[in-house]
Image (spheres, rainbow, N blue to C red):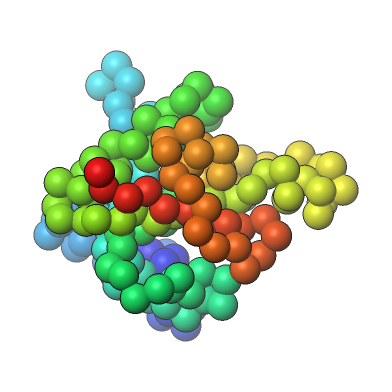
Length: 162
C-alpha cells in the first residue's frame, strides 16, 4: 500500500488497516502477478495503472515523464530461495504482458541502478530488502529502456507495446 496512499494515510493505516485495504483491492481486481514453484508462492510483482499510485504522483523523483497514460510496476518480492535466478525478469515480463492485455501501451518502472547505488554507498552491498522496486539490470533484460533520471541511482524505465 506504500505507493497507493499518501504518506499520512499509509502511516495512519499502518498494519492491519493497510492489510485490509490491500485485501479489498485483491478481491476487486488483480494488483499484480504471483509466481509459483511447486504450488507455493515464490515471488510477486505489483502492476497497476499509474493513477492508482498516489505516492508516484507526488514524488519529485518519479513525477510523470509526460502526459501519456502508463501502467506502473511498483514493487517486487522474491522469496529468498528464489533470488538471483531470473524470477524477477520473468515476473516483470509477465506484468508487462498482463498490462498490455488490459489496454496499456506503456509499462513503466522505477528500479534501483545498483552500480550507481554502490558508488554512492562507497561499494557497500545493498541488502535485498532495499531493492523492492527492482533492479535496472532486470528491467533492461526485460526490454525496458531508460527514459528519465532525476536521481543518480533511480532511473525511470519504460517498455512500449509493439
